[in-house]
Image (cartoon, rainbow, N blue to C red; front, side, top):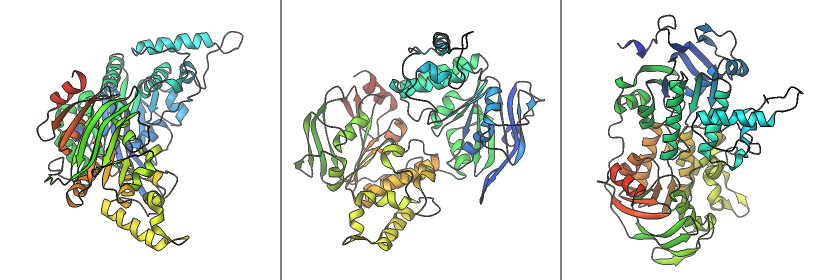
Length: 509
């Protein structure tokens, strides 16, 4: 057996081990979240941490950050066993955790965010605004990132705000930076810049723990990978000893077979046609059609107008010109409510802020768009609503304690299934999905793929799907529309298109 599979080397055996978490256990009421997990990271290494949602990754990192206390086990950092692991102590020891939801004050400047809670002061005891701006600029220059440190952070792009988080970490002399799904909101070009920053910091001896569901990124940037499943260590190996298939198998505990489900498409009549759609500075002369039973993919680089196209079709964003026809009849869609009434469902890119009410229950979220269907006069038929939601939850495999559980407590994959259940409950005939598997683990991805194929083949649903993952587009779609700068530059067959063709059309044509 490879020594790293279940017993990473001790810090005293390998001088360059920066972090070792040994025998970590953690329980919550009714849940064994972690069981005897051992995890180590070397200096200057990018170490991937992968597993399905609920595998224990977040719990392990919260223990590392000091947000949680382990029930058992030890943490050794720089060959020194940590006696206390509160957040401030770990920050002082050079550990920084950068979550998907940034801990930033959007109304403050870049410099103020970098030095939040620790402002630089002059000899007179006043805040040294100029000194903070100059030091912030130096940190960002080290990252190859140019932005005015006096600029309000709320005005920056997501990629720029992520760089500010990294700048804040290195301003604290962080030697170990945890990146939690860093690419979830980045395009390909922005991701390459992030990777360049990571590699530059590696050369300075900074280590990274890289958490991602996108396995291609793991192979692109990581030198080692650790897999967790059901709160236990499965394996920890150098990247050269992994393949995509072996990594998936370790994550899900079973053979995945073909990553994408087989399709036997049988197309019906045209259900949607858009002609000459335009919105100033965003969309330009967009035309295409969609048939019943078809999955039509839309891809392109970040900023190409993919999400904006879907939002325009459902009336979330206004159109300046063009026409939309449903089943051969011209129609005007001026709001998502109107789209739903016409049989068009929309699963937006940001499910947490636009697709779900996180504080509300699974039941509420699934039925809210068609709540009137459960009314008897002025009263809600609670029993009928419960039965309907329970059927959707069972059919989609939503894992939740009950349909009365707040949807915000569910994993990303189960939240996405609830978004889809809402559209199915609304009996839509056309489904627009934007990044359907973003932030979703590999097992839940396959379940979502299976669901989309079932809906198109058994129910005749027409799907218009936006994704930034080219393998997903090629593996799921019957046709592919490539966009660049708000225009469709190519239509390619889904079964034979290559990544090289798609990227050529997305960047050159």
